[in-house]
Length: 192
Image (tube, rainbow, N blue to C red):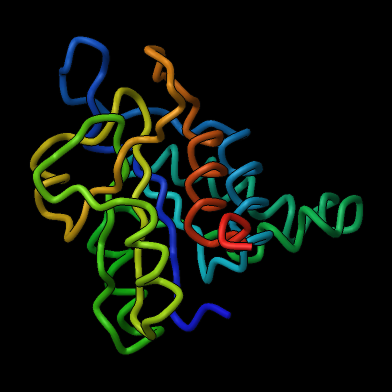
C-alpha cells in the first residue's frame, strides 16, 4: 500500500515547439478526459491542468462543469467521478501552493521528458521511494515538444524517458501519463 500522496500536473507553458521555440500550447479535451480517468484509476490525489490564458482557463472550467454539474454528471457517473479530482491553475506556483496547503508539505517535483538530464531518476528507484515514504510528490507532464529547460532544471528529479526499445519516441501526453502512472503506482507485478 502506498504511503505517499501523489499529484500530477499537465503544463501548457513554457513548452517547446518542434523548432525549440518557447510557446504556450492549447488545451485538448481528450487529454483532460483520459488523464483524469487514469489519475482516478490509480488513486492520484489530484490532477491539475495548468494554463496561463484566461480563455483556455474558461474552456477548462466549462469542460469540468459539464461533467461535474451539467448533463454529463448524470449521463456518465464514472466520468463525473474522474473529473472530481481535476483542478485548474494558472501556473505551477499555484499548484504547489495548493498542495502545500492541502498536505502541509512542499511536494517533491518530478518532471517527465523524452530526454535524459543529470538528475534523471529511474522508475524502479522512484517507485520504491513513492511506496515507502510518506512524502508528497508532484509529477509534471508537458505538452508540445516538452517543457522548457529552465523549468526542468528547477525540478528535484527528472524521470527517465519511457523506454520502448524503438527509435521512435513521440507518444501523446495522455499515453505517456498512462504508462508512467502505471509504472510508478501500479502493482509490483514484476516481483511476483
